[in-house]
Length: 281
Image 1 (spheres, rainbow, N blue to C red):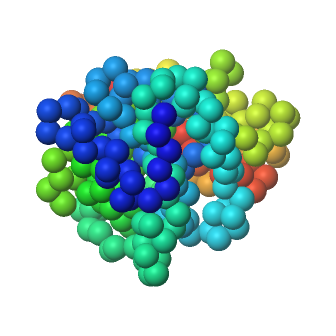
Image 2 (tube, rainbow, N blue to C red):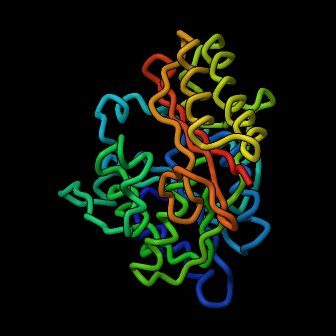
């Protein structure tokens, strides 16, 4: 396994894989878990070479405290990747290697995708996501890049980014990986106490109930059901719940035939913010 902290050494390591071989890419912010490993495993199976980036990107955080507390453990991440496959290339750059002396995000127009759900609550977040991915795509030049559906809105935005920037990379979405309890795997779960993890199961349980009720209830009824569910729980604070069109991400008020819908949710357990989503039809 090669571990590179600057783009020059990374590019040199990738030279033998250019042109005749497929390069897969899994961008991460570290604190790896089974969800990440599922992405890496799929990438390994579908490409000749796989690059995993480990970089906590400052421009996608609108909360400095959240950035500071984001879990970081490069040694543990590398050991986990090494146990999965020996031929993975790890790119763990310093901030200066990505941004130079100026840590700024590019302002993108994702045709409204960036203003829904997360965009309403995390100002500038998707500009930061677009900026770092555009930089990484241009450095690594992968054939395929892999993203988890837990960040479904991000997945849709990445597809739009590739279109806007005319980048020759295929974006591959991978289904959410869940704990046995149903809780969506997330690096933020590492910050939850055992009691908080048990309480947080309510998030996926509620989404599952919404899915089961989707065909027989109106969207307003389902919105009310979710709101009342979390009002009864004093350990979790609902930030938002929305049922949206899967393609446009626009909030749905009424159901239409031949449209696909997905439920999106963000919840606070103490100061820790958890998101999840689920296809409804």
